[in-house]
Length: 202
View 1 (cartoon, rainbow, N blue to C red):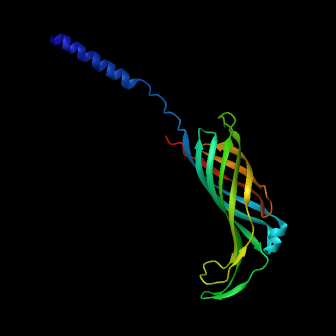
View 2: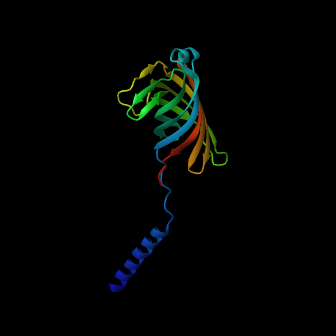
View 3: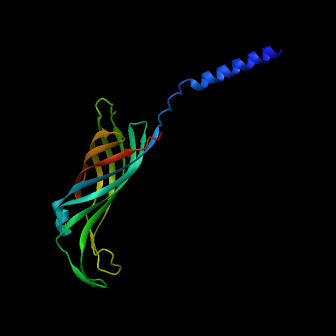
């Protein structure tokens, strides 16, 4: 009986050791992956809208964005961006910190959905297209001044289409985008370049 028990214990130990040495199955890819990005870009404004707000029709700014990528193909996201305008109606006001000059800017808040192509390792370039809409807030004001004069600027956003070129570099992507606003009566386009990070985990 003792020999039989020892033999059974040996077989169990051998099977356990073999199972421990067997290669582990690769983890399944996550269907929903968070993504974050930032860009630097230049905006083009409708000349009439720019003239009515006394600003130039070209601007530059930054954008931060985030969202989720579903099954490596579908994007749902939001962004916030600021464009710094050439202020042609700048004013000066006395403050507790001395005489300060105004600056003009337009901030946009967007929601979007999009599609991506695959990005193979052998040729790490892909394409994407997003569609969405932006709400804007434009103003001429003095930064960090509580009671200073403020002018509201009417530079609408609206619906847009955004083709994108993606280049994968290790664990992040370099992107170039051309956001074209369909109405064109305020913001017309934002051409930008930046980086995007998809958090696949381990």
